[in-house]
Amino acid sequence: MSQFVINLIFVGASFALYIGIAIWAKAGTTKDFYVAGGGVHPVTNGMATAADWMSAASFISMAGLIAAGGYANSTFLMGWTGGYVLLAMLLAPYLRKFGKFTVPEFIGDRFYSRNARFVAVACLIVASVTYVIGQMTGAGVAFSRFLEVDNLTGLLIAAVVVFMYAVMGGMKGITYTQVAQYSVLIIAYTIPAVFISLELTGNPIPPLGLFSEHSESGVPLLAKLDQVVQDLGFSAYTADVPNKLNMVLFTLSLMIGTAGLPHVIIRFFTVPKVADARWSAGWALVFIALLYLTAPAVASMARLNLITTIYPEGPQAEAIEYSERPNWIRTWQETGLIQYEDKNNDGRIQLYNDDNQEFQSTAESRGWNGNELVVNRDILVLANPEIAQLPPWVIGLIAAGGLAAALSTAAGLLLAISSAVSHDLIKGAINPNITEKGELLAARISMAVAIIIATYLGANPPGFAAQVVALAFGIAGASIFPALMMGIFSKRINNKGAIAGMLTGLIVTLVYIFMYKGWFFVGGTANFPDTAEYWLLGVSPLSFGAIGAVINFIVAFGVSNATEEPPEEIQELVESVRFPRGAGSASDH
Image (tube, rainbow, N blue to C red; front, top):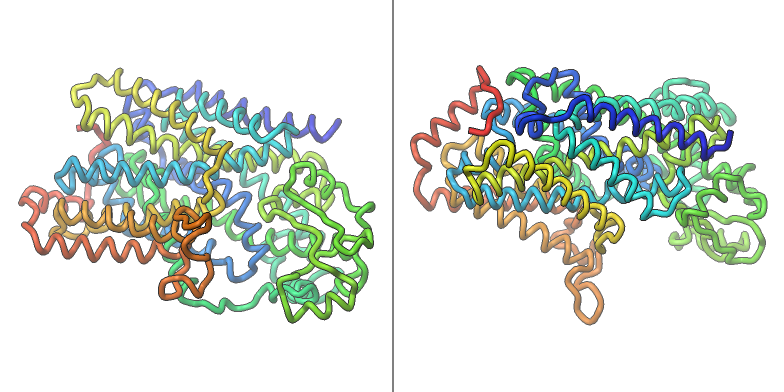
């Protein structure tokens, strides 16, 4: 049986499962569509939340980021998991106590302003649309490799599958589909990791294998990896981070961005009680940890496997001949995600850091004229089974897992967008008297339109697509998170302060990121090069979400203290939300 047929079986079976669940869990009311009826068990919700969170960025890209940057990119692990601690401690139970359907609805009621609700909708849509681009693009990459179709066809297939189970089932269908998707993606991620850890260290538990001895050399795995990357002019894999300020700010941006992303927050409206919201966040952390503890091991072992594939006898010896390159390189070259150029015409593959000036003399003494192999870091997890020569069924399994990760988060984001349009815009402003049947129809139409837009943007990503995750987190962290925090913990913040804070945080963050990512042009070039010497006070654009959040807080408090206090009933609302001893069910009242 060919690898294509095996991939088709695994992916087809998983898709049939998702669509079958959607048919079984079809939403019949707006409460089903928005919050899955409000009766999801905390363990089930924790697993669905984990799938909602562990997107293509977590499954496909995170290990690649760590493999490329080593310890420096551990900020992704710290920021994304730390965000769930913030959610569990500071947001989830209080928002659940409020008992409404959407984040903009909370902001609109708490700040007694339709305009505040509209601003929250704008922030939500910008963050969610930005984030969903990456999910659809990730699905296209996975399809193009494993189902041997072009990227556009892959995107269209993904869009059809999401349409069938998300539009039909709403939050109810998405919740139980995400439980299945979590099961698929965690099995797909860990099984190859176990095989590779056994092969390289003899330890079947990847997080422990990371700190075990390398079987072939007898030295610790990380010491072996440090040695081989430094022999090729790269920085030590375990090297410290020189810019501690950006490391702290970037970690903080990811944390508050996580806590502010609406597709994650709305999951806590689906449980029956306030206590269940806390337990859901706890269970989500447990389920997320299974992948996040494995990711550093996958990254390290993939990087070592890649280098030893090119230099079987070590970086000091000759590289393999291009004509004898392994099949996995040939396969991924067809997707364009691996590129080779024989710069010194010796017929071999030279892989090294040609940006390292100190290493240049060593490279020249070996007859190297530049790095010849460019490997897209996003392929490392997907290619890992092939690099390690694992059985074909493992490759089929990871194909299904990668698609599950992309589609689960895409569905959650699309639901957040749909809810904002149908519940907060149409019912909240345009037609408050719309019937439940009409609102449910509007929600499904909104979801369908959002899928079409997401598919188009996935096929034609904007110029900032490479930084899409950082941008989405920056927007959510700088605009939505501060408004939620102040809405819950401060009676003094009024509608004027909240609106001014959200708008300022959003605009300042967008301007700063786009300024360095090429959206402001002078003579065909970006205003400012994206290098540390041009950054404001040395703050990277990827880290600016934390600064935007601080500006949001300052503006909101300043404007609120200069204007009238919120009405007495709003202060009583804050008091009731802050002490969540009971909980009503989520409702649309």
